Length: 289
Ligand code: G3H
Ligand code: ZN
Image (cartoon, rainbow, N blue to C red; front, side, top):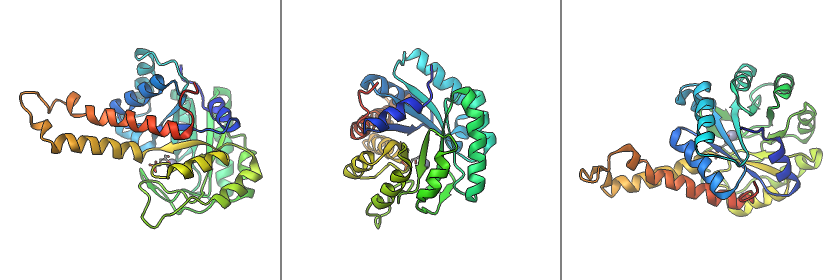
């Protein structure tokens, strides 16, 4: 039932909106993201970093969980299951073999030639399986699950060479940063984004979507960003709601059994749903299924 992300992202690119890529961490996260997508009639990309895959118990666990939830929750909107920041060709292949419908090969830490060669290898393996592929040029600043980047801007000529490998969408460093944005950060680099888009006329991916102001998200989308990656924002929403529940003493309510994980995790769950609904509204993908 999973679909690859090619059609949804290209439709978004042609019609000037963006598909939300949401990183998941556990059962609650996955359920919240899938249910919100279905409720709002929105195509989405459910993504797992290598760290999150490890945390959840491995590739097979993730695929089985997402597949089973799609079935039991009766999810009919387009959903892609995507490997986020895959660090090796082997990892990308393993995810494809296990049933992922989309993979990112992140060779941004490699010399460019090697990044190209390895991306080509992933594309060659993915195509017969009808799996979409994302690659990266330049790098995303900050750190996500052990993936550290210097934040070099993507080079337009390199973007062209990378697109020619046959990938489905391209991540580029455009002044974006993983995790919460530091106080000195002011803006995405729209000049660079324009140069890259001009060179390729191709759907671009904005990593580090959490914390980018709404007007900048909308401007980036109007300039060719067709996939926006969100991880931290949902984590912050989950943490805030959970903290408020605990600080209000509710987890200590013995009579109401507020310590029951099904109750303890509920405010965070609801917060993920609310924040995601807000973000897909910004992206313009809400209701586009
Ligand atoms: O690959 C995932 C994203 O780039 C998430 O970044 O945690 O800053 O939203 P974020
Ligand atoms: Zn990222």
